[in-house]
Length: 316
Image (tube, rainbow, N blue to C red):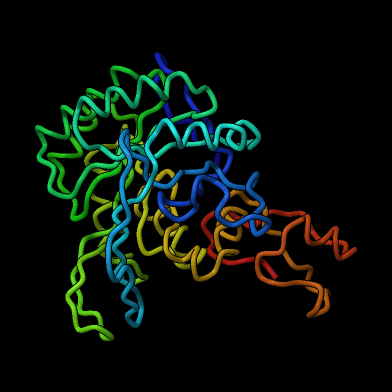
């Protein structure tokens, strides 16, 4: 399941697992200390970073709904130079690629940011986040500005709903992979204050819409790797994107906040690191998602046969 992103004229990255956190869910790689086996992930995607600082949103930031949520943050960050300075030591220590999510504001800022990123070898790739109302012409200019100053892979995160003209503009101007998609925009009423709050929508109900769009993109651009993001709340959700929608990898978002262990569970499963249960094992000698580390810690001899990719189930 190794995934290599990048063209011959760049410094490609290899993901040994096709699983990573989505931008904004994992901090700068330090959001959930001691809760993850980071080395089991394919890469770390940082929270969104701008060339210039962004202030946090005012007022209500989260509205919870059955099956999901609307969240508005304003993408707060202290600016690229400070983010690199404050996190360089951490990024040099991690054993997997660090992908910096860069907010695509205007072409000048994107070009400056990519020139600065090129001076930081521990940032292995850039994910360029396009705004929701971007036109295909603007997308082409922003991707060109990023690609010119970057010798590393460039991922482009597309807005939702899907727009194939924007995807084509990204691919034709240097994108090495497409991330599909940014969480869609929504508006809801805060039940406590009665005020209307705009934000991004998260939840498992996004999966059917996003999966349909990912399938269309993978058929439309068969030579480009599609990284699916949206509505992944189980191992089967992640498998569906890869086995049935044509995605090369997946990003998990809101599910990480609710069940942090799910990120490792999905990573283990898609990397073939889930142990199977011997038919004569006792009930307390196995649990869903058990890996070799757990088995060794518990002192239990287990089969090391990997589950067959695509069966959707652990063998018992």
